[in-house]
Amino acid sequence: MAPPLDLLLDTVAARIIAAADELTALDSAIGDADHGLNMKRGFEAVLADKAQILAKPPGEALKAIGMTLVMKVGGASGPLYGTLFMTLGKELPAEPTVADMGRALSAAVEALKARGKADFDNKTMLDVLGPVARHLASGNASFASVRALAAERAEATIPMKAIKGRASFLGDRSIGHMDPGARSSQIMIEAVCDVLEGKA
Ligand code: ADP
Ligand code: MG
Image 1 (cartoon, protein in one colour):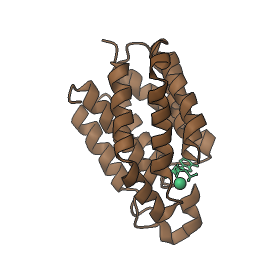
Image 2: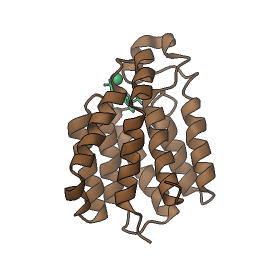
Image 3: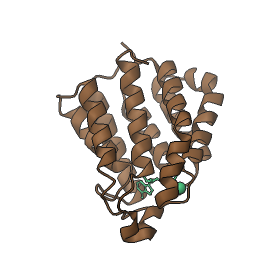
């Protein structure tokens, strides 16, 4: 069965928009207090373009979402989330299995690493997206295990010292706060799980 792109888009966008204050609060601790606003602006633009986006085949629709995010989110996270969606659009077949999702997300993680010149354990969104990609590709993923892993990996950024992005300017003072991009990635993953499991 093809994934319900319409509901996926509405749910991911609604959850990110609802979390704007939380994401901005996280970014105010270790950044410049704009991650929630950036993401809200990006997903509001995606929703405004929804009819045009959904008129395209699924791969092209994901690429269009990525392009809109690049243009509207701004900051460091705009090009990175743009790359994520564009790579998913390129890699996902029309009716993906869980293994396909793992492969496509792994390709997106590699593209993100190259784009941001970052690696795992740098206290970024990669610390959620990378482990979830590997878990999906492992063949042992359930909705519950994916949700739990994403939450655990977002929490695991709290004791990390930031090596990349604005938070790295703080050095040791970045320790003790959850990375805002890790949290926004977790929120998106949870939204996708909820839709695919019929709970959204
Ligand atoms: P900015 O840092 O430009 O204000 P945002 O606040 O929107 O942009 O996004 C910050 C988030 O972007 C961080 O929490 C982190 O997860 C992610 N990020 C920043 N730089 C990188 C990078 N080089 N690689 C991967 N993720 C990054
Ligand atoms: Mg910021």
